[in-house]
Each structure stands twice: as C-alpha cells, then as structure tokens.
Image (cartoon, rainbow over all chains, first blue to last red; front, side, top):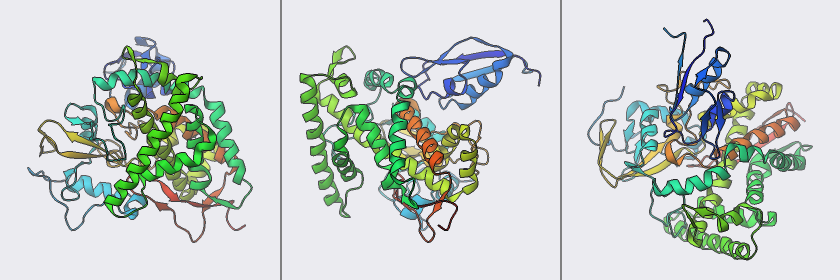
Length: 72
Length: 401
C-alpha cells in the first residue's frame, strides 16, 4: 500500500485515560495531566500512519478515528 | 447461536458457577458456554443477571445512568460507599479529576526506579533457591510494598495491612453471617488504622499521597475525613489484591507455556504487549457488579430497575465477535481492545500503576530466573471471583535439580 498520511480525530469526551494511544503512538499523542490522550497533530504524515492506526484500533473507548488519505 | 427470551433463563443442569475453584483455574471454556447459550442470563437463581458478550458488557460499563456502580455500604465491611468506585458521575468526576493526575502514566513511570528496586530485592530472597511458592514469595509482598511506599505508610505495617485486606476479600469462614462478622471487624480496624495516620499527618503533612489527601482541594474544597477514609478503604482493597492476582495468573500461565516464557526471555521488549494479551486472556478480575437504575432491555432480556447485574469481564475479553481467534493467546495481538481494566468513567484508577508493576516484575523475575516450571506433581490453586493463584509452586531451572 502506498504510504500516505491521513486525518485523525480524538473525542475528548469519550476518553477516560486508558493511555493506549500515547503508549502505542507516542509521536501522534501526548499525555495530559490526568493521563488522558491529547493529539499532537491534526494531520498525520505518511511515516506516522501506522502509529495513528494503532492508536485508533486499540482505544478501548473507541474515542479515536483515523482516516488514511489513500483509503478509497 | 442463542435465542433470546423475555426473561433471563435460570440456571440449568449445566450450571455455571464462578465460585468453583476448578472454573477459576480454567474459566475460558465456561465463558464460551455462557456467551453461546445465553449471553444475558441468571447463572444462579436469585442472583445477579449476567452479561457476557463484549458488546453488552462494554455498553453497561459506559452507561452508569442505566447500570449504576452505586452500591449499598456494608458488603465488604465498609460503613459508607467506597470513593470513587461506588459513586457515579457527575459526583464521581470531581474525585477522578483529583485522583487521575496522581495515578497518571507519567507519574507512575517516574516511580519506576524505586519499584524496580523493590522487585529486585524480593527476587534476591529466593533467586538462588531451587524454586519458590510464587504467591507468598513475590506476588503478595511486591505490590503491597510498592503501595505502602506510595501512600507514605511504614513498611513494617505490611503484615497487618495484608491481614486486614485478606479478612475482607477472603474471610476465613463458610457461613455467610460469620463472613460478614469477620469483614465488619476488619473494616473497623481499617478505618481505625487510617484514622490514626491521618491524625498525625494533619498535624505535620509530609511529601506523600495521604498528606495530599488531607491538604488538597477537591471540587473547590478540602475533603472531609470520611471522604478520605472512603478513598483509603478502596485503595487498600484495590491496590494490593488485584496486582497480586494478576501476577499469579501471568506467571502460572508462563510456567505452563515454556515457549511463551522463552519468547519473553529472548526478547524482553515483547513484555508490554504480552502483558496486554495475558490481561485479556486471564482477566484476573473476572466480573464487576452494577445495579440497573432504569428499566432497560439488553440482548432481548428485560431488566427491571433494582436488578443486580454482573458484568463478566473475562467473558467479554474472550468473545470471538471482538477478538478474532479469541482462544489463541498471541503476545503480539494487534489490535487488542481488552477491558480488563474496565471501560467508561470507572476505568481502573490504578491501571497505569498496575501496568508499571507488572512490566517491572516480569522483567526482573525473568532476568534472574529465565527457566522455571510448575513443580512436578503439584497443581496451582486458584481462588474464585478475583483469580488469585493462592498456591503456585515453581521449580527453577530446566527440570531435575
């Protein structure tokens, strides 16, 4: 698959601080004071696509959505 | 597939009993039967309705306005509800806003050096022996020592602490009335224990968690003594027993699966994802309880206001609908949205502490003891409800020594 970037969104209201995102995608997510995830960037560059996807797929609250640019 | 009825089916001849130690040792096939036959059912007549599918359990955990975590006091020796576990949003949120930062991933990682020292010192005690009984030798003292240090309580109180906790969780009696008596007596001692320290700390605050409880503002005002005690009571039960149980389940699994153990020894970088997968597969906290606070239909079953409900986390975590090849333990499973720490507003407050303790323990233990098995001729013993491996005899080395 060609390595494009993508768009990532994080629902702060649904987040309860499992912390999977900033552990699995440290270049995409930061941790706030409560241990909740915070997006570092709105648009995900190609080299961080795998991290962004891992964060979205592993969030137990389904609070993260990732839309890769190369999705048809 | 199961057919749905309007009333929760009662227990059948193939009754599912989580209080059976044999079930606690190998619960996964029982979970499968539960999900396949009646995902919403009454496993024991007169006892709670049981939700066993990932989807249903997740929904209940995320909707405290339907499935409330508020519980009457007294079931575990307490005279008031535990904070924040038995308080729902919005009131619960003010406590979590105060407590979450104290147990954040960053705060816990900052403790790693001290936690590693505790783990390493405990392994030192038995690393040169032929084997150990893992629960007594490591799984019990390790998280308890970490906890006392974190709270700012004297390490010498360890045995007293453990006896108070054990009397609540596993009272040494068969008769329910006798059990309640033991729990209540221990509960009084727990309040007295913390009261004594809180009195001292109020006079001269220190640099520890209890001091922070006394001085910090929560929702704009200082907590009163009862609120602080209700948090401490929960910490004593949640902070010690769950990590002990989880470690026992994991090391027991690894002792019985030499190829998996070897994989962790060969590549310790695999430990974090292996922990996630063993949390999923073993799910030490099999179940949590909630009370229905408004009539609601789930899985085709009508629940009435006031119905107690058991959410079977262990079953949710082994549901094929959510986890492809759920019966396969894959240390590199991806994705892995297990809910061993729950979901929704009551997500385990100590999950980051737990993950730190588990990782450091598995790293330190395997660094010193890369080879071990269950002692030949012996069988690990599991307790019910919270799956503590109360007897886990290990033999170190490749085998005959």
